[in-house]
Length: 262
Image (cartoon, rainbow, N blue to C red):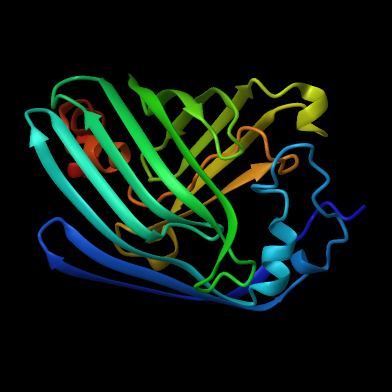
């Protein structure tokens, strides 16, 4: 009945590099105004409620610890990159996440794998946990299609313990803006998934330099879904490797060479 909902607030981000490759970081958010928590729609999924209780998180998490993690990045071998992240990984889950990426410098192809063991956080998004816990992860193929287009295929076990895959396509523009679309299909039937039949949406990434008027590596982004359900739900881990690694590899540098002369 009220399809457009939004919150406005303030956010404090902090990070500290303990040593090269080892970073401690956290985000604290406080809602000042909005109507997300006023929704009367509650979870009515036949699956474990892994995302559809977001309204309750919004209602009880007026001041929320968005994440608090220790993140370690390393090079296990030639063309290989690794990451281990532990702590409160995102708004709804905490635990440990490990990732490995194979990405040659001069190749448009990248292959990765990620494994996570997580527990659902309390609705107030502070330090407590609920009873639900699960192992989730995926194997991924990335491909730089050229001209700013990037394709991605994930085969995964999702948060509700369903199995399936996600296909994504994104276009990154020369000004740093990025727009993408994705669709996820799992072994959950359309009837059990509920309204929407399967997970799909649009993603937007906006560079902070667009608003600051000066160069900045910081970006902000959001995902727009027709409706949030529990099937095909994926963990939101910060600092995944591919998008950071590819910026310094040959295909990306060639595509962006024109920026150097502007």
